[in-house]
Image 1 (spheres, one colour):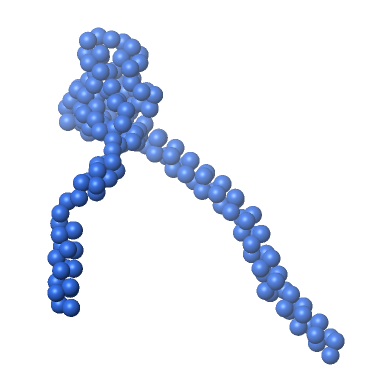
Image 2: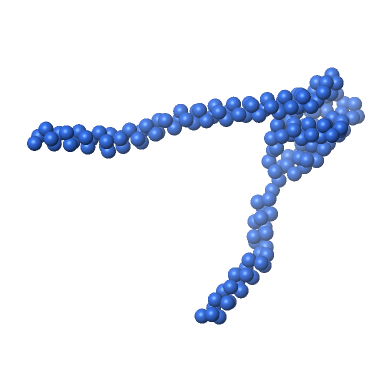
Length: 177
């Protein structure tokens, strides 16, 4: 009996410590490229990069490096290089995906007019976050309205069967006695 327990313990230890290629493949399949990063977070990355003293094109390159593990490339480094080489704002941003439109719109006054980019990025990120919070509250209120009907269909019959009918039956039995 002791021998079986000892053998089982050794097998268990060997199974835990020996890497199995099948599990490693499954783990590699789970670790995939990241989905799109939140636009407000990207604006925060830009603010952090610009606040360290980087120029707008260099900050775009830094944010592109930070987003390098996403599924779709951001092309922000190309945007920065095109701006350095003298392309217009619209020409440079034509290569960027549509999800960077809020970033483009927030940085345009800084590039064209020379205004400070940090307050623009902060305001745009706050606007995106408040818009997302408002959409969440609206979705929660719609969900609450949708849940009332099934709840009523379940609890009202149960209340009638378990609460009202026994009272009527007890009252009716007393009347006939």
